[in-house]
Length: 187
Image (cartoon, helix red, strand yellow):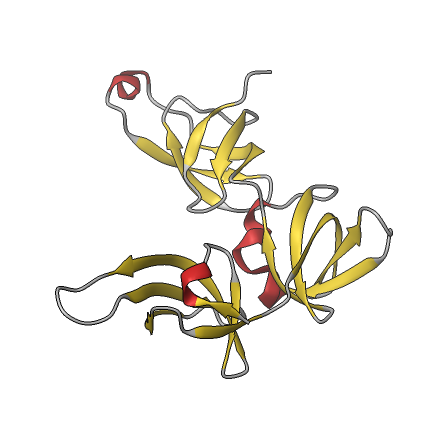
């Protein structure tokens, strides 16, 4: 049990038997009345996002979420196989649980796997990863100064928008939260 005054971003709450991750919260004191805590919660399994307001100092159940660094090994059918870096135990994580993280994961890459009672809940990747551009159209000489973008396919199969000067074979830094281009990786 915790108080709504103790909420933190990333904390997982157990509300009516369902797990919700706190994305954002704010203490609000209206002109009249008691202080409330406004929050934005994400359902851990479905990804649905809701706004919820709690009275200040309300007791809420917190879920015990174990976050462990694991290495992504390979894809086995529809499951992604991860290995715990300390116990060397292997975990099969469903494609639904991995979600959009698959677009930025390469074999042997480390990620944080969050579990609750032994069940994988979600995958946390670093804020950015380095990936190779496997295909992109060549940019035209005159286009370089316009600041435009073009599609590029990454080694994971994900397609993102990159500046016109990026060529096939270059390594770039990609934001894992929104898939945006962040820059070239110097070799």
